[in-house]
Length: 141
Image (cartoon, rainbow, N blue to C red; front, side, top):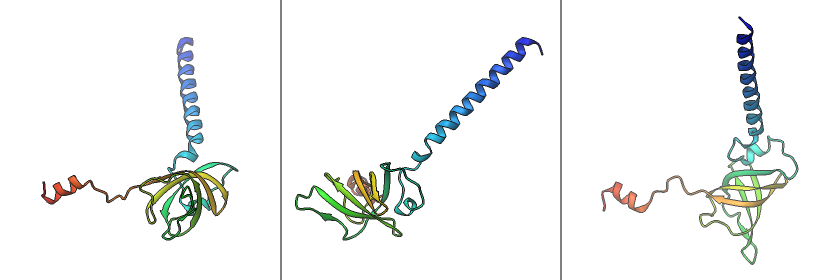
């Protein structure tokens, strides 16, 4: 191997090493954001920094929704049917929000049992089908 070949080989190996390090750092930085949300059960197993914004997903527990007199501030419980978490939200809830429905809540933890929510997203029922499509499948027009 002459000097030119050694320089090319060293350059290629250096580039591969730098790209590997960059990919590793990116994956490490995104490690916390890989999950769309945590369930209340998973929340007990992770370590959070103070005022860290997190997403919690689960079902709105039946008979847990409590509105104040202005209906702008609401308390409700999100559960994964094993553990529960109280959600404290000040804002307008989405139209699909109701007890028994799946929600994803973004906010910060006040303590292990209460989350101050900044955003509430209601997920539609996975069995949902538009009426037109349901009629077509049943043979109606």
